[in-house]
Image 1 (cartoon, rainbow, N blue to C red):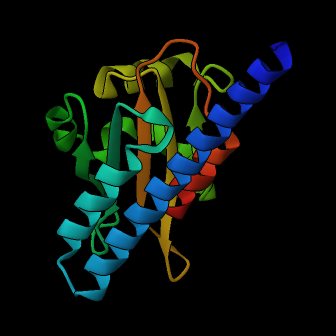
Image 2 (cartoon, rainbow, N blue to C red; image 1 turned 45 degrees about the horizontal axis):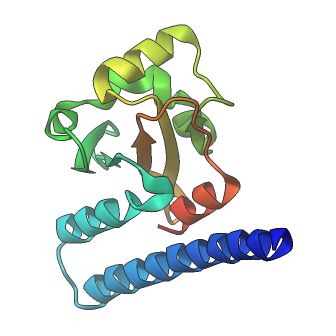
Length: 170
């Protein structure tokens, strides 16, 4: 009986992973459909942010867009929780948090296993009202055009490699 119970638990875990991947695939197909229909960039970004929020059971998703003329980044879209205040964020105010993404073009993970330095954590918490985030650089033709991120307010939370890989797909 104990062995059957373990198999049942393992089967449930596998089913949850399959459902998560089917949801991501469905989301990507919706995004692809908008692109092929020639829809506006704002509409595509909004749907992408909405669907990215589903990764890792996140509370919030956001997208910073890089202005090609000025080079500055600004919040373009958000989803989940109390995100309207995020739309007013300029990248200058949170640059210390996302510096790694900007300088190295590498993802930023902030969670229990990867905390920010104290000053940056205070800035992040003050603006985003989150405890964790995974932020992925978005590139086009080898140039950084934005940052797509997800966030969670859970205590003692860590992102899995699969979560980061799924965010990268978006």
